[in-house]
Length: 357
Image (cartoon, rainbow, N blue to C red; front, side, top):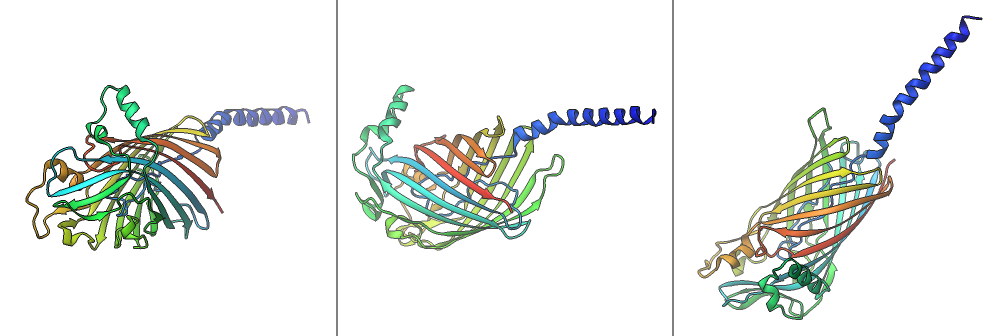
């Protein structure tokens, strides 16, 4: 009896020491809470929204029986007006695009996710012009094209001053092209090797092409997603290629070609509920010149609008009020060139809710 008490006391002390020693590790894990990103936002460009592009996504799948629902809202201001004599091809853009996207994913198994995307677009004159001009003026230089701005929304593609697509002063709203997506995890994170997944998508021509809601053609897309997490930091990368199946502008002298897009994102987990993100995106052009009749008078600036790549940067934040809910918010600014028909400025908010089985 006299020997058991010290033995039990030692066991209790050792157990308490083990629990106490474990607390910092548990607290750190709770503080990180796993990756919140990447930020699910696409490149917004009126001449390219018709074609499918993957939004950034984690490589990790949901798991069998789990589901995830996401609502995205973005507001993009686009202004591309000519102040030089017209050439053979012209794209005249003066509008704002409100994009609403409904995304639902379901875990068919531990390795496979199946998804559905339903976009809704509204084209209008908007409210961001004054804000953008004031900000540009604050930094000392207002873009030249904003000095020639007109006061009504306009969306037109022309060849030899003859529009082959135009919305005029209409302000259409409608459902875009619905897309079915799939993702399969190829490899879980192992040491310094990141998690890797393959992605696929089929876009259906459900949007009204006359109102710029869709291309009127189907798209096939293939891609890869990778992610790596280390302590409070996350790194994610997405690559994708889209193959347009058909060309609505073939008779007007524009060819469509495979489109490549990529995203690279950095995440810092400040706490279990908050994280900060910085994301870079790039997208090649879906068009090329070469269909008969061959263009003969295209300036470098006009060519860049149709065939130039787009580069963007996205500073963003994420808030998790609860583990199942994530709210993303931030803005997008174009990089390198503003002559490629990309939006001058975009702000967005996304609400994501997931249910694990």
